[in-house]
Image (tube, rainbow, N blue to C red; front, side, top):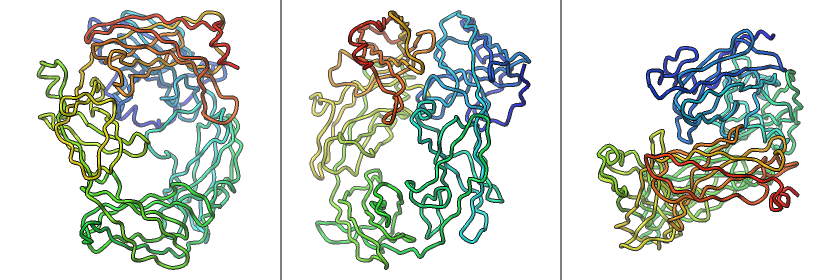
Length: 553
């Protein structure tokens, strides 16, 4: 038996948002339908780990995450139990930040996805913890003074490590230097890492890598082993160099007059070392005297009017170079921007509670070619307006500030004509009278994946998505969920309609590229869904099928 003293949880999102939950209990304990239960064990090197907090987190793609529905603490044998749970789709997460817990779903940092059916007791779940590696060191200025309160970042260089990490995190690094400039990063899976510190000090590069270089290609990688500490990974910031200024103005191309109160963005196209990429991004709003960016290192930059500035103008980027002096006289020629306006209509909705949620919706558009988009909040009357658009082709997207994403975009009409999935706007065009047809969904699909003809390789993961099959071209995207270890999945908040359910199998990539690669064709199955009702589906994955075998090669 292993005795474990829990460390204060760094993933504060799970605890700060959590209600007062007694150990092993759920807020739904009083409900007659909440009859599910989970029993399991937390282990470290195959021994039971006591004193580990475990939470049951509702699976959601929204932000912020909903609070946990239950919490338990392991006993001296590492066992835990949760009772009176509502059915649904969850993540079972151990809260042990000094340890690494391999995840079966890259939407979370650790733990397992589980799908509970009504009245079910899920037994024998094992959550394995691996002692995390540690990197520690000190960050100092060129003169040897400590750099205090700066975030430290690690980037794994091994794709096999990337396969074990979540796709994205909730924010920046959770590790910072203390008053001595010392940092300590813990809970790392074994692998090779690049360590860096970010700076907002004028005259210094945005990132400095261990041991004290500004180009990542020259960084010294650090090898981390499970449960081991790597010390003296120090970073010395380079001397502060003189920063230069870039000044200019935004003018109306038609009149030549300066435009006040316009947001201007700047990013680095190429630094003095010849490395291209988005290494700097700043925005400011100026009052008519012109814009002024300070503390610029030598390199090539671009200034522009961001699409998300919600201005009535747009302008082409202006590229300039800083060599050894300030740059003045920059001029962004702005043109009248296009806009899109209309009304959101909830298809077939008569429920006042559903209609009252209109003001919680946001309509956004993005270029077909990709890049940053722009959104607008929907008013209580369903109306919206999106300004600041250059001439281009745009896709519509719908989201909600609610934790449940029950609304889906069925289509867009312009002057009574259904659009093909996108809209093209001309320079300065003010498009009005759009109708965004939205469906409210409370339908559920419960599914089971049956694997025949063998076993999946280690590290393989399954995901299922649902797409409307009765609305060609719409919606643009569908719901995607993970399949748990028992082959179960649950897709919620679906509107009435015909859906195509697609099963995709992912396996670890042997080297480079994306951490997980799909194999074989996706398996498709069609199902009818009714909002407010539950549908069931079984998908068979035959590993002996020739198409799957071909995909593995």
